[in-house]
Image (cartoon, rainbow, N blue to C red; front, side):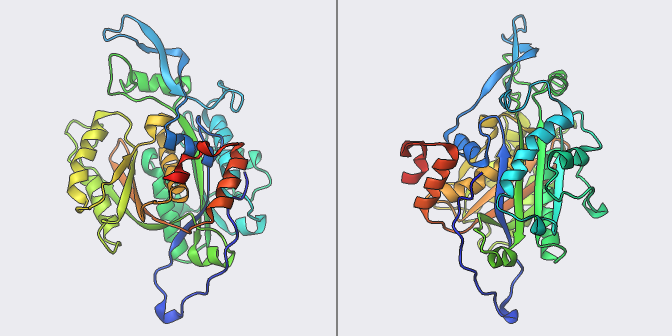
Length: 400
């Protein structure tokens, strides 16, 4: 993966009496998914809604409303020449996450990476206890530690775990424990065991269940730094973490009572507390909506409840429509979609909100703020070179 950004002049730090809370910058991203082998390729596919759905070979679902005709379950899988279709569990997760990590840290020295905290998770089934050891074996040249401290154990709610890891990393960076963090995760619903579990739970979309999900897989990683550290090494800042919020729904979808959207409301309101305009500047919301009724109903409740009036209509995006539902990696795909939007669009909003909801009740919200403006001509030329693009129409965002 090429380094698409020109070096920026270092900026002097503020005098001590003027210093504020240290901002957390995002300076690298990586993603591997069925519609793109790199973060930029995937981001362009998501923006143009180019999907790659197919039928599974062995797991069958209803092809008519009565279930008398069957077809393969709809999946979105990384091409077989990239990852063999029979690779399952943590072996598949390692194959997905390894290239995403390399994209994320391109141009970074091993000495700097040794000082980073590595928060890497595998949410695939069956997950292996030795996932980190397997990943270290696949990336022997990277200083991935054998374990993470006891205060950063893996969250037990996969859907929100990637955002929770970002929040954990941001809190540690602000406390001065580290200056760098690599946050990554992988998940796949396209293997037969995972598909069968979803099928028996009645969650797969088919002719008899139009409110089910189409499944996918992905792995993503982002590089976080304190803004001071990023400026000292003249890095281009893709975005900064504006604020975040946590919440828990008292009536999870796995229970018998309907959701009242309290958890996601609390998460948004907590994130709003740190903003100067209570969210009016948020121009885009990226949510993990996937076609399931419970998510749609909950979002309908919270949308009118938490956002202040705005003259500009807020865009709502849900990448699962293009990638399929990537489970625990959905947050990584959403993050890459947001970061690429800042870089590709002339009129990108000042802030973007990202929201994830776990089936068991956890809710997480992160607000991103637009990062550095880059010189568009060299940036676009570098992007075309990386993606082997010849003509300008392949990048429609340039003339928006």
